Length: 202
Image 1 (spheres, one colour):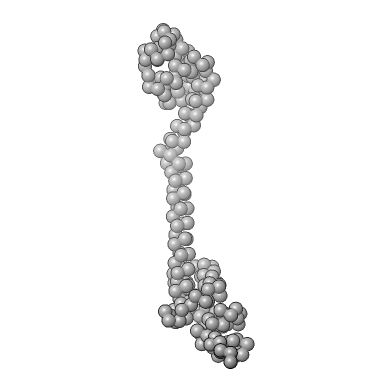
Image 2 (cartoon, helix red, strand yellow):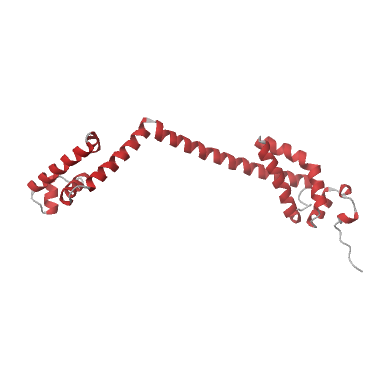
């Protein structure tokens, strides 16, 4: 004698006559009528719940669809010993709504921070000053790259190495007079190329 399957089959009875737990059992068997009936029973309640959390019709509609998609895919995970079907649905919808809210808040904070940073760079005196300073330093480097090697060497040791002319002479074994001459020639070329900028950069 075959054992009877305790789960009701939708083919043998209209889904409207099934209670919530029986509907979930039918959904486990992939009964589309059962998920449609469950949706009809609880869509209004879950929509109201999600709307209170999100206050956004579009997000609320998406959460409702995601909730019942999860029910369709995970009906077998429902444990009637732990909660009623309605409580299970509420927990799913609430969890998804809160996740959506947090995601939205993170995006808003990120967008606000980016906007503030962009505004600070382009509108505040400090931001504008930083941009201009970077541009001037780039121009200085470009002009220094055009100098003869021996002149560029003494300037780089002075600017970036923080060395005095005497220290440069000792470091490079170049006579101090030659170091001074090369520095003077290089500075004249840079002043001619950069004019006002050179005074602010050095």
